[in-house]
Length: 111
Length: 125
Image (cartoon, rainbow over all chains, first blue to last red; front, side, top):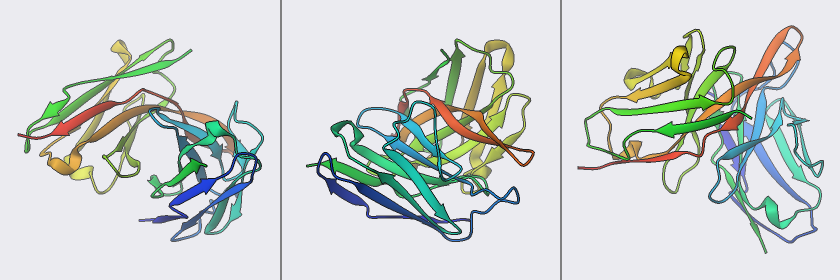
């Protein structure tokens, strides 16, 4: 099974400042297609999860361009260029190479 | 605008079977994969499994022995059954649609782009 490890687990951020979340997989997420099979989701308080990023670096429809994903092999990063109050919630990475596995989640709190 | 709605008992006794249904409205269940995800209280998301509208399934290995996901296209619904439940199965359960978000080198890539609002299930006597 592929294990996903996120860090940090808690991230206080100031509005307007950048933020980044790390996600590491226990094995490479490189698919034979040449793409990395990783998604990022955000669950805001009291809401259902929403898709942010797919294939490691592609923003989903309607996602603001302050969100970006990058990475390769086993190391991936979600970046928010300038955090807004509405970005508070728990962020999850999820590998989709072998069935699906979520990371533990990173709780982003707005100062 | 496709919407998903989970339904089922909010309380299940230990050792019994948890049964939930997700009703799809505003669109057809055909042509898509459909998924279940849960979030135990105080914990993170856990992927449960998915089903293609034709009936092919893929389950979380840790739940596979207790899990059945089925689809009823005539009702635009898919369902989850989890047997022999314990307190560890207490969670908010979400259904979601897996849409083809990209085609990469002749492979179709799917992500969960539409979610239900979730339903809370408590396992307790």
